[in-house]
Amino acid sequence: MSELKSWLSIAEDSDFSIHNLPFGVFSTSDKSPRLGVAIGDQIIDLVSADQAGVFANLNIPPAVLDRPYLNDLMGLGKIVSLQIRNRLQKQLCDTKSALASSAAVFVPQANAKMHLPVQVGDYTDFYSSIEHATNVGKMFRDPENALLPNWKHIPVGYHGRASSIIVGGESIRRPKGQVLPKGASSPSFRPSQRLDFELEMAFIIGKESSLGNPISTREASNYIYGMVLFNDWSARDIQKWEYVPLGPFLGKNFASSISPWVVLMEALEPFRVSGPEQDPAVLPYLTYEGAQNYDIDLEVGIAPQGESETIVSRSNFKYMYWNMHQQLAHHTVNGCNVRVGDMLASGTISGPTSDSYGSMLELSWSGSKPVPLDNGSTRTFIEDGDRVHMRGFASKDGKRVGFGEVSAEVLPSLP
Ligand code: MN
Image 1 (tube, rainbow, N blue to C red):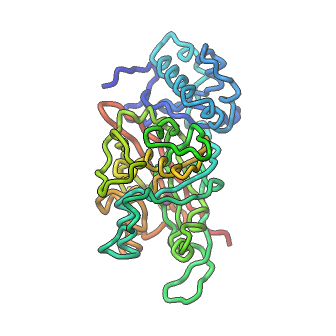
Image 2: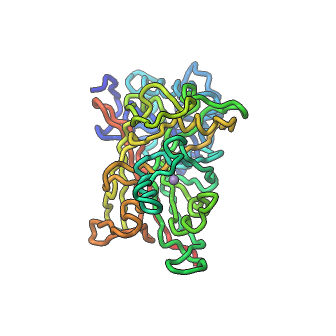
Image 3: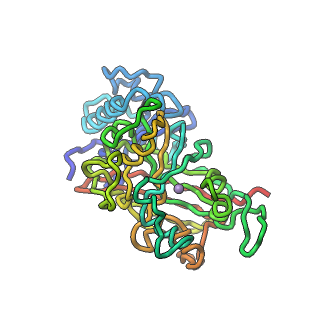
């Protein structure tokens, strides 16, 4: 069991335990969007906490807390966020603290609206799950040689679009686009009939690098602020017709949903595990030391409109073949720089078994195996009115650190 005991009542199974303390941006009917930290079913309003003297002597510029995004706080260096987190952790365990005597600092999560926590600069999506890449290769290329020759040598990725990254809770609209109907020789323009989710996690850059200077795997952790759950919405029929030869475009950039609470890497420290063995050996700039994967349980549920949810997949972030340090080292090895607020997503996180795949494309095996839902219906892809939920948490030795959830409802295409 943990040695930290708060005077605040926190449910045993809360994702937002005293060991977590993730950062986000919230507002209420009488509070403008500002920074907060989640604890149990409450939010600590960092502006009010600062005014109540909770951060005395830390010399935090008050303006960075009264912002609708985390970027300015992140820009001060991660040490400042860690000082805030440490101070809150201490005072949450001290009945005589400034925090304990300032009830007005706490806002019930049920009364708050969550906002996109960061102004996202550049967004990159990787393709780092060997199970996912193998499944896609089997379906669309060669079942015998599913992985392309570069896959075990390069953390494959592409540059996505930041403008359409939205916070969980916001609905998305089914995209329209060019598709090539089966057997047709010319394309049609229509609503996507193969709308899919991708179960991913993303890390957020908290320190800028300079153009021309690669970040090594050894230095990578200094640049990674924290993580969120990431649903990389995908229109498979649009993607299939457009992707040759330059890769994903409109089949991907219409929306990606992220969870509102940013979990700092320090909170995930107890959940580090070794990654899979990499064979063949990687080039020297991609080698790394230590356990750089994380044991984070993930799940995806689908709730048809007005109905209860069916869990369709359970996966784990530990399955990633390429870890975040390798991804960042590869991304910058040519001199490409990163900036505070950049977001780098993992790629679909599929596990080894057919109930752990991270997309409907794989779960329904390209539409050939309908996935049963509890209400008696089935899904090959996502239908209008469906709400897709993703959740993630790590748990060990009585400590639980979770991400809450990211969910979004799919609205019909515009007429
Ligand atoms: Mn993706």
